Length: 384
Image (cartoon, rainbow, N blue to C red; front, side, top):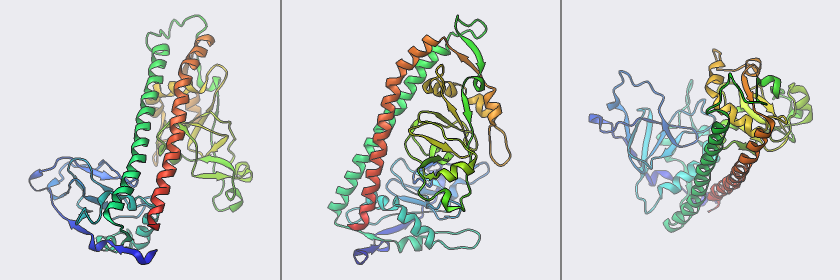
């Protein structure tokens, strides 16, 4: 009901407080996932007094929308005061009893807002979404009681997701601790126990690369039923298990990509840009060139491989090279040393950690459903 929408100009006001006297020390940036993050700015010889202060319950956003993943970097500050780049714009709700800031942030999380901001951005070499354009944003603003009800419902979902993520992290740490106790601490590599041996990972498991069919040919992508992963699918994932990808390809696309199909419960490792990010696939899938995929063997189950790579991550990253982006070659990875435990010990390890990983799988799936529910709630805002 567009006729019931109201422009933000009547509900928000700009804030422009510089960091005079270095009142605030914490410098942060904003991701296109819409949260504050550590800034990568080199602050040597930079006068931080020219930076802008963002106080609790104030919004900050990066005006630049060019090369930002078709999203606008905006966030509501809910922690301690911080400072941001002078190029950012800060604003706040004029009256929390008329427009709740958390309700407004929910609107900014909608993909429709990102598309609107990109459409309204202007510039030549770089495009910007200025504060004037922000004031022209229209949205439904129901009674404050209704706004608070919606925010409460959203936060219940968000808090459950956060709790699950904390549990997943603890479970992963537990599995890793068991691995270290069994296979790292106190192990003499020069005098291995009977039945144990040293080998190269490439001699023990099949390792696959990936490929990308032409994005210009519709028959490779339209109505595809094969899960096709790119590194962003994995880097945006908060758990070792992954259930969906942004794209699916067809049989024709798979044949043209030079990639191979691998079964469920293989271990995918990103091998370029962000090297060493891991995920276990939930169904038959393939990947682009940014992965090395390990197909488990009878001796090396997927959980052992997952824990082993985590203990080797520094060495793996050190093998990466490149000018445009870091990348590790499949041949270098296949040449990494690995200890193969005695079969019975490895079987006991699998049985010990399998319940842990199964619970991780359940909580990850639950978070996927909760995220879908959260997105549904955001989509409903337009129909208030």
